[in-house]
Length: 137
Image 1: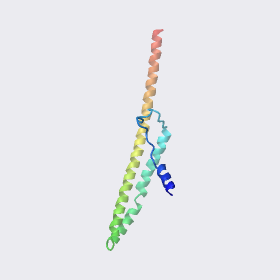
Image 2: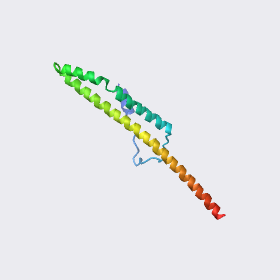
Image 3: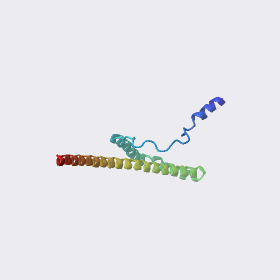
Image 4: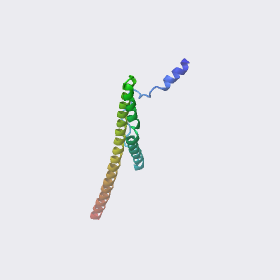
């Protein structure tokens, strides 16, 4: 039994960086394509919409039950607290999903603009190089 418990404790240890190690890893190796960003953004948007529509279905009936129970039981106040907490948590989750969706939409558009700018700059640089070569000949 002790052996099994010690095995579980060992399995739950976090990996650690060796002394003197750490620091920033390699830069620029993250690759995400537009389809990945679009899929995550779309899922966040759909969840945001569903939470707004379906996330608080039980709130009205829970508060009604809590109001009825408050007359005779202390459970009513606890049920009201649970309904309020649920409502707050749904709102927080909905805000987070909206933030994710909006951020990914912005990121996609910003990167598309960056790609266009870079492609244009490269074309101009190639044109300049061609003009310089002609001028030298």
